[in-house]
Image (cartoon, rainbow, N blue to C red; front, side, top):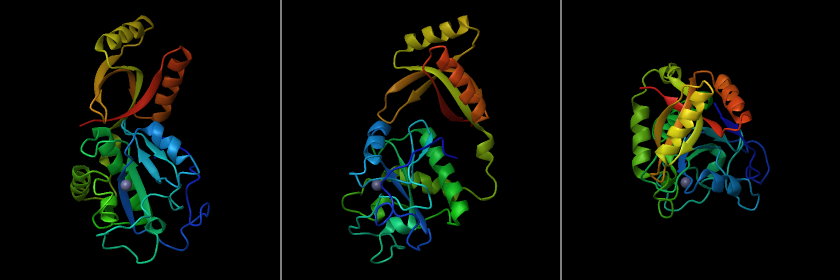
Length: 258
Ligand SMILES: [Zn+2]
């Protein structure tokens, strides 16, 4: 499920302890990181930060693991006028919950890829840890700290996630997964002409590419040159690597049909 795995030093109570001090996982807390992936990464990998999430969904829908699910992250330990009904008094909520964040600084916007990957992770975690896919088991940071984190993970985003989860009837079926594609993007440009030029260059080496638009969390439009799409992420990775070795800045994004 994870596209990339990193090990944040910020986990466990006391810090560095594995496991959850005997607690079972009761729920999943959603967050917005408030920044870009690069700055999130630098902060979460810094042992002085005391900040982490179990996982982050990036703008392009890729999912990064930062603290293994069996360990407690440093995500929502500060309780301030909490409304979450499952809160255990006197226990750090990170010990009995998982945390999933999405990158972004604007609580009102998100990408389509991000929403769908968030739903995927919630479904997988819920099944694995036996958590019901609905409120209050799925909750937002604003329910733990309604004063300073009222915007986390984003008012409309949280509502949308809960609405989408309520449409899931057969938890053992995941038809969405069958329509998931891994796109090999050989260049992403804010200027459409540059994207066209890249497309022509690819044609010269025998690659029929096409251009898709991508709007990031800051509402910037990018023109991505798609060299190929695969259902098997390994094939996509191989193709991207071969483009990299010919000097192209290729990377992989997830794309969901429908
Ligand atoms: Zn948060």
